[in-house]
Image (tube, rainbow, N blue to C red; front, side):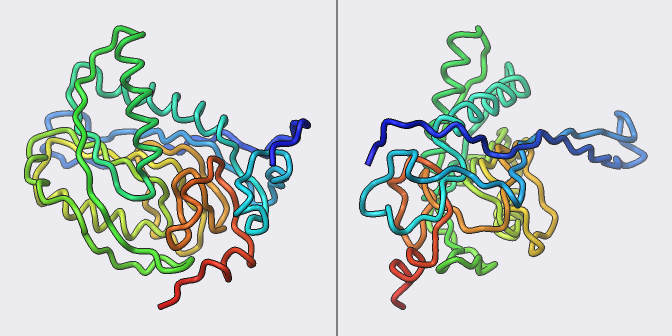
Length: 253
């Protein structure tokens, strides 16, 4: 249902940056210390989000969602800023955008489109190629910590290239850590990671991507191609699933 009233209650957000000091070996030809800035938007644990009645939600999911956490329009604006940051950092250099399927496909598509638009409209020059890999680590609402590489038969083609891994969400960080281990063995020129979401959880190993859209509470999020056992990928907004939805779509195995 699409009601005529628009919700104006804002999500509680904070704009953060983290400074990491990276020690470089004494025989490095450059500086002996580097500073890395990571910028992201943080959604607080007590953020009320938005009432689902204020948005267009598919009828088959109306009873399965607790709230809308991040509306589709907000996601789009944040992706445009991420694209600008990436174009700034890789100007005049070619990159291979590596999509982590399935959940990352919509974020990947929208991000690549924004980068292409910036290439045309801002006069920037970032040669862009794409590749795909599929991983499996989620069963129900728990990250198993083990990954199965389903795709990526041509990963050897990434050798000597700038690789931008495009992921939908970083949970504990273990899946990404293992993927980066696989990619490093191929010896690309560089690897950077962009993730739309980073979950704020005690289970985290402390990994942070190079580019982050939103930091969110430790809740299970669906929509915008993020799924719960293959459901909810067709939902435009990022929403919190409720107990009814978890039970309805629980794994049968």
